[in-house]
Image 1 (cartoon, one colour):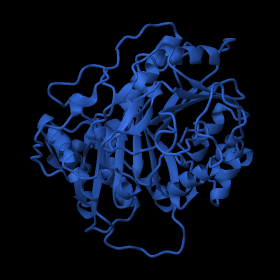
Image 2 (cartoon, one colour):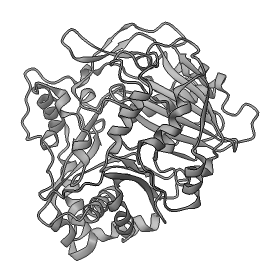
Image 3 (tube, one colour):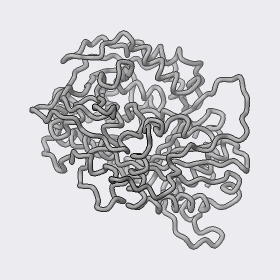
Image 4 (cartoon, helix red, strand yellow):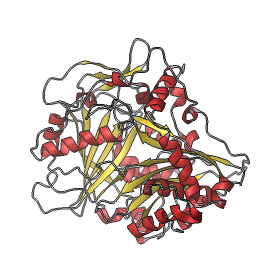
Length: 499
């Protein structure tokens, strides 16, 4: 399988800056409904002006390159809660504040059903308005409290709901790799006006020429992690089907407040700077980043897990640990890391099941901690896959209640939490980030017209960041969406299927 790539000159930061420049003349405050004139009309041209694009692989890629996917925005509305909601400041925990500060993009795709009211915008907006009553922080804005700490201002200003159409069809998106084309299915956010000027949630329903629909979601990371974000989206979809709220959100983040006084008793390597390349290759060429998605079948995953018994190893490792190890090894090999090069793996880890006492069901916020095994590239390549899996296993086992509470206390002692926010510097070569969505209910958003045929990231912000996705058909397969330097991606494809 030839990977489908979106090529960007000088990486995603230039892309974000260009989008901000595009929106310089747009207003921050919006009324209901907004004008249908939208800078999106120029987005297709902008994305291709940012860099010299190269296209490889299937005819699907070439068709998209030729078509340039024009998005026509029909209407933009700021949807507010259906009832009066509490007006207050919502305190953010330390783990709410060490996440990236932009909106996390995701995209759903739905096949047409033939129903005359298929993805009726009125139905969606009414259900959205109802869902925002229990999930009222989602309709708020960010602000700083008197101490300068970022909190959520629960002011019911609303979430952005965009209705759009395109001449593209679902099959144009091929394997749904999170390219810049997918990014166009999510509203762009203008960050230039400050943290209080933009919605925490932006949504876009795009009606495709084939009759299908995409739902693009951009959720500000301070507002929610993946688990809480899906709790909201799945509640919204339930309400669109006429169902009642099943699990109410628990809106009180002080449960994750640090102890007084803080008692950080572990060495929290996850918040320390990652290893840098020992040998820096000087080049005059701009760094080209590629984004691809690779599917591993149930049989391939079973073969990979069986490798845990190689060379007489008698320690059992999970399918996830073996897959993450395989991705880590394949990435390090594709990058050609020297034998003595250290590489750090960032594993997003949900603390909900690890904290004691456990958080209430429906806890709304971020509970993401990070396990960070470190290995030497040469040892990883010379030893079986289970060696890297063992590093991952040990790092995950360490993430118990004592360790997580120590992490909260460690963060409390830091003079500037923003300095610990992970970004491009964290995941770039020689390091790697893995976020698993395998245990998240990412395919449960049925708005009344069936479950999505795909849900996944709508973009990958940084080189060296990857996502592991479950199958939408429960066939036991998993997919890896990853961003790497283009020259490394070709080798990664070879190594990831060498099981």
